[in-house]
Length: 127
Image (tube, rainbow, N blue to C red; front, top):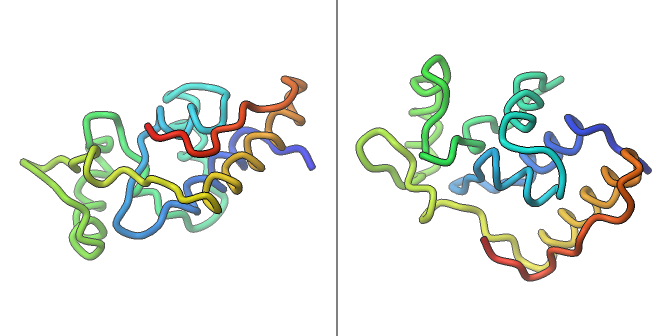
């Protein structure tokens, strides 16, 4: 089954557990396609509810219009913060084997849909 880029981004974002985050660039790297801007654009076109507050800029912030809306979510999930920014290195999601299997399957389906071949295997890779 092939995937469109936005759908692949949404699947990854939906898999981030409460209390953890990924950056736009992390998601692009895990998918083996696109970059932070493409992930941000895909996140802005979500067809349904997603934990959008778990997908951040590399500096631990969100766009100003979302930052204030994210604060209660971050507090509820006890996401570590310092001076109004998420501490990405502490909160970054580090998938287990099952998580990497899921991510590899999404990346492979995306690669199939784009004609890019097989996505690289990220099994066990840590950011």
